[in-house]
Image (cartoon, rainbow over all chains, first blue to last red; front, side):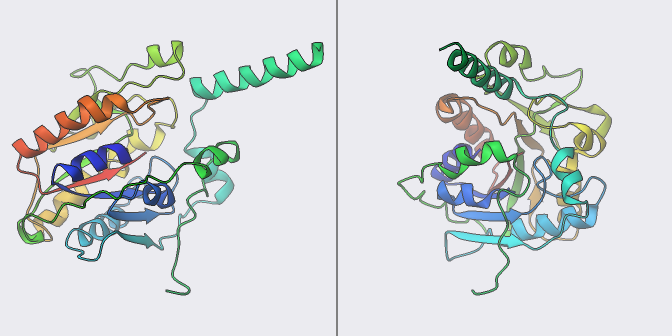
Length: 116
Length: 170
């Protein structure tokens, strides 16, 4: 995603990235970053919570005319779900193919070591 | 500023994923930031998500079958989501995220309603007619995004005279 932001900026169109991983966006040196401490897939907040979504949207718009760049604004909006529940809730019900692939590779390495 | 709130970028990330992100190299070159073309009250805004949204029955879902066969590959194509898309038209194809909340309210990833409300109150110029959905997992290479989809996205943004693109990685 930072790759797309860089392509669009380079073409002369301003971008703002709204992300739960502002540290990564900074490493890509993106010019306008809004950090949110929300679970993945929820950049604008809770399902059904228009007030929260609008608050994040306003913060993104506010960076458009920021002169001093790069600019990063982290929003202090608490996620209203208990951490252990929220940590699980955004994840898929089964491991993604690449996670499964890496687990299988690790298991094979362990078997190989055991046999050796 | 001392005491300023900083987001913990790793709060919701599975611990086993953390080293890969922490060792992510810093890009050597700062992007030359685009200057705002017009003031915010005249600016046209488009939205982009990488949550893998598509229009059910009208668009092909992202190619998850190939990703299952080739775990280090991710579908680089994108879908246009019109601003009048309804919740019951939205599907989600993404193997790295639960679809539960998005299928209840896609605005958490592509907040068309929130921006339409702000447009009505005059917080910015106008909301574009076309918005964009990618599937964020790209495996080992983002080359297709850099060489094909990125330039095509720019072409459509220019066609719609968009001044600001707001991106929300999933």
